[in-house]
Amino acid sequence: MAELNAIEIRNVSKIFGFGEFAFAAVDKASVSIRQNEFFTLLGPSGCGKTTLLRLIAGFEFPTSGDIMLNGENIAAMPPFKRPVNTVFQSYALFPHMTVADNIGFGLTMLGRPKQEVRDRVAAMLRLVRMEALAGRRTSQISGGQQQRVALARALAPQPKVLLLDEPLSALDYKLRKDMQIELKRLQAETGITFIFVTHDQEEALTMSDRIAVMSSGKILQVGNPREIYDAPTDRFVADFIGETNFLKGRIKSVADGVADVDTPVAGRISATVPQDFHAEGEVTVVLRPEHAMLCPPDQPAACQMTGTLENVVYFGTDTHYHVRLSDGETLFTLREQNKPLQSARFAEGDRVGIALEANAARVLRN
Amino acid sequence: MARTFSIRRQRGFTTIAMICFFALYLPIAVLVFYSFNAGESLASFEGVSLRWFAKAFENQQVIDASLRSLQIAAVAAVIATIAATMAALATTRTEPYRGLTLKYAFINQPLMIPEIVTAVALLIFFARIKIWTGYSGLGYLIAAHTAFCIPFAYLPIRARLENMDLTLEKAAADLYATPWNAFRYVTLPLLWPGILAGFMLAFVISLDDVVITEFVKSAGQDTLPTYMLGQIRRTITPEMNAISTLFLLLSICVVTVFFVVNRKRV
Image (cartoon, one colour):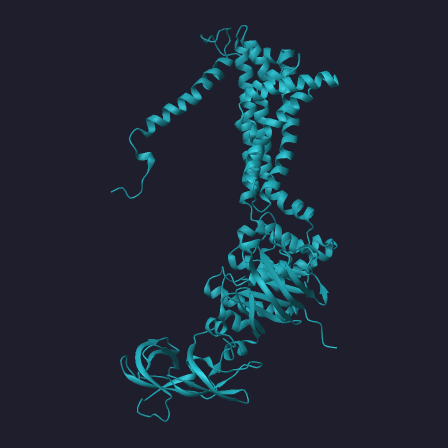
């Protein structure tokens, strides 16, 4: 038998308000989160990701659906009975307690012997490298240190699942990068399943084993970072994660999961079709900016598209080009890595061609 | 161009401030000054002496009234603070709903209804109960004081609760604290300064009350303020000043203790 999932969300809805003011913060969401996984709920603010996290923590109860933790339905269980702990966005450290008392709070509430609590607090302080500050008040330590204490406090009772509600959003850029690495290390060392909520797609891509992208209370796509980035199935997912180009087209034929799409601006394009999706008629094709290159417009064999270069933006590692396509409407973005001492091949206002890499285009569900 | 508007730079600011402070403190200063008068007059100072303090301490009526005042204030303030804490929890730890404002109004009723109206109402109401039960002890005064002390205890407690981060209680629940433990180990310690402030305020308000006490008290149940009121109708000696001075000292002590305790906690 396969290993039990750490968390299984089964057709969960959370509706706030009544009657005409009813609003589904989470809308028939289903997802399975595996043991020891770094799982991220990603989406813009208001997409329902935090509500879903609060449903797992027990601060809200689902209107319908089940939440299984290691096979046990916890949907109606109060938060203090659930073996999950939360790292809050605001940290929510107890201001009237020392760092050590904060970390020991969970175990004390569980009625563990004093000596065990002390040992575990010491181990946790070591784990987050805060030994020197055990006796401090939480108001006397910096934001980054508070973050570590919040983590240690949530990890101390050895929860089955650790919930993290945008825990890095209050930190400055450098500290955030450090904490991302720190979080990965803690997850590897403790072997606890992490469910991480963020609106930062870069953070999600770099940290997660798998990502669920949410919008308007629905889970649109679940997959590892590469799948989410390279093979988005929804327009929203493609648009939310990274920069994207959308081309309208009409399906001519489909064979072996690859569609032959006729686009007004780029002619015939081969585009991968998502699994279990019957593609026909008008569709949208998605293309990542780094999967296209500029080419001289006088080589029609190599270039699928032509247009006018409107904008060149230098980014250090790469250069972004914005090309107005021949239909006069579509603005196509592409990105080329910079080579040493390379001078610009094209200038703003030039006519350019665009070559697409093979297997780069994908058909979207909507 | 004034870069920053400072009210202290306005013409006449100092003068107005001084007039206000004089109006507030000069009468009190005079009262305290004459409590040390060696003579019997409130108008001519005849040398420094503590004789009126000694006289006040020898006066059994003053001692009785003082002890009664303290007893009523202590019991009423404790009950009022407990009730106010529960009311504050009930009105802040809930989603706002229709009728919540009305409940605020109900709780704060004693602040809005003229004291004399409450006094007359209680007089009639308690008279009825006295006939039914035959009981005529301090319970009536304590009940009345408790009632009008509740809003004074409620306001600082509610203010403290409203400023408290609700996530802290969620965090406690998340860390396996039952609702009672979350209250005991997180809410209550953080609420404590508010409760203390509420208690002090209720205590001082009870200590100070004249109108309701005057109407509700039975014979021989004078509190210090009603005793003083009774005395002033007769001859006024600096003994009244001495008692007032002591009363003032007690108030200052209570407030100072509160500030000291509060500062340590934050």
